[in-house]
Length: 276
Image (cartoon, rainbow, N blue to C red; front, side, top):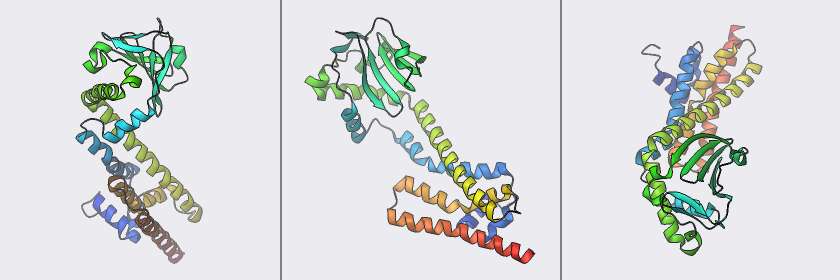
């Protein structure tokens, strides 16, 4: 890219001068995907900010977890870093998306119980087992976890919920703070990849329909043009993720973004007509 035709020029033309985008139609796809990646990273800003400013679970997050925490009927407790229950069982205590958390009090851990679960965290004996589709991928000793988990009486969930959840969240906050570099980075990567896939899918569909209209133009060029013409949409999604735009304002901005694409289509049609 030359100084005059920098990425800034593409952003500017995508937002303000869509007719000028035609001069970038022969851009290499590597630059186009870097352009998409740039806006995907910006869309992940909320995850980045959350990671940087994280200081434990918020009140709302704790309240949500507490409401979703399953009543534990078994008489179980962590005693001297070992799970002990009066009855042998595998009890689902909490479910968050694709991840399920179990207390397993059997003498032996039967992994077949968790084959139907994508991600599973199983507390068994003196260990916490992290499993994927029934296969253990990692194991951590309870003794390596925060002291809040070393002696935790699950019967307090019913008899003294305030003490139970304050102790539980004390340990959770410490674990999350100590491992933030891992789950925070993973969260940012997932957010960025998801944004790239979403952007790319939208661009591909738009370019496909443009190809139906402009048969003689190579699909690669249409993909490039649609990417730059979608800049307005990228910006709207980024601001909405950061500050939560009003629905009416979002609709107005979307109309503006799609108008840019329409102007580009009309310019292509005009040039093809003049060329013929």
